[in-house]
Image 1 (tube, rainbow, N blue to C red):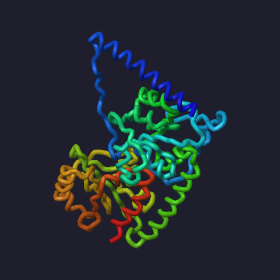
Image 2 (image 1 turned 180 degrees about the horizontal axis):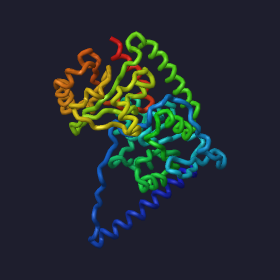
Image 3 (image 1 turned 90 degrees about the horizontal axis):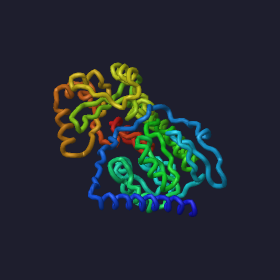
Length: 348
């Protein structure tokens, strides 16, 4: 509690000084409100390269530092003294991972978390969403966290502001799903929980793969697309839906998509024209709706009524599936959920 009060006192002092400066500027008549650029993270952003889940080394990032704390080197090479077993974690953009390892999370960004989690799952977690992608620091301070987790796409200034509240660790947002889970488990003091989740996930993969043997032929291909809100068509790389299509269920990429992936292995998606869509289409194709809005549904219907779509073999064979936006996420809870969902549409 002494350290918590120290962080809280530092922030209150900083806020008091800032208020005094603003009042002084206001008295001179020269105050001017700044504008912040609006930006966000798309439902499909921040993916890592798909690969078979396996333990990753994490010990090199830690160093003992007194009783009950240790030093952790985060994704942007900051050395942070953190509690060995935090009890009040704010995870900005990492809520599914925290729930997967049953970590004591008290706050998160609802705008992002609700893409994967239900209201019931978020019932005991406070919303710390603020301006755009940045959290509300006043809300964070009021929750009295003992550890804060931030994604590495935030500006350094935001990170330093948040770090005045409690020990703050920056984590890679684009890292492969289960490697990220391992590291988050380590930071949260629960490395065994991450291992347990991965072991259970791999067992479920084997179960679903066995169930699907009668429905997936050797060498069959699959690919995924999204018709985004900008009305442009994109083909996904292996990062999204790929862990399930390719790694779990054994589909292959169509030759054209494999060539594209080889030339741009880190690309989340690539824009294509409607005319070349059949070149990237597999024996099975998944079309992701960006949302359930009226406009998104209208765009999806227009594409499905287009002759290019209708004449593709996958469509004629009843192996084209229009799916919801959550299918394009790659957090561990969604990947586990997707084993059931994709298996469900593949089995007649």
